[in-house]
Image (cartoon, rainbow, N blue to C red; front, side, top):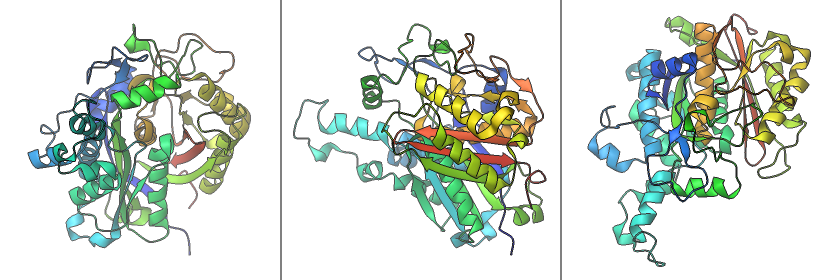
Length: 423
């Protein structure tokens, strides 16, 4: 019996620069940046004071006052985005067996903004060593357990099948979609609403990244602060956002005449077991994940038309990725367009892997490769075609998208037009 093939039939995105897939793609294809000075709180005491924020009004996007009160911002983003993905898919769940519909949501840091806010309340702005729980919001437990994200999305779409939160650092958004595809392949679900969300722009997150100097101190020029693969890069720009997809088995999607964005043709994840935040320069673990994902997709390296890079804008990550692409794709790496959308929407931690999947399938949809913004100064150690500054028309039938996360996680996914991948 042949393995079930899994396709993406619905896409939802809430990202810096706009709410909705259309605004997201317009930003990327025009090469605009959504990075700015932080407005959510006073960042003056921090080393890095720039971020990619979303202008998001939950009430404007259909959330009730009770939902807004109950949910952390990351959960709000996930629910709004899931509703867009389901509407885009045209999948009517009212007649489906709800026990056959699953949810997987990725998140690296959970309800950071809600927890930060509630700590300020119960500690009276940090004045009390012994906090007073009586002042806490009634839904504080939901902030403490990231599983509430999957529950909120499941309630929003009416799914009663497997519900999971995947938290593997900055690869969470890739890994959650990879897990969802496996649920369908193994027969545990006929459809899965899958993606990731994070809203980490808070004082505690800034303090953590300040301490290890991972974020950029380029505060005087926020629009050009995120510079993946550029010789002057000096750290990433923190972001927020969510991307959610509807995944279905290929034959079922074809039967109902669904629009198919892409097939999830291959996926793999590895861990370097090396260092909590450090990376080996040879990129061997990421290369291994790429090689295994290509093998699962039954595609040669030469079949990849575009690489959507992790491209965080740190010195070590960009060197590590460049080496991994060369090791896994061989000479084809030099002929393949590579770009990082973090140059435009920042790094939303666990959410970014799913946001980059969205960018990848939209690149396939439009046959346009989004650029790496702010790439003006070539780095001799990063010598591939990083599509600087301007989007490029390019026939794109198969895309490799990758992620790299603290803890040593390395993930790779191959997305392809169904006719391009193996039956």
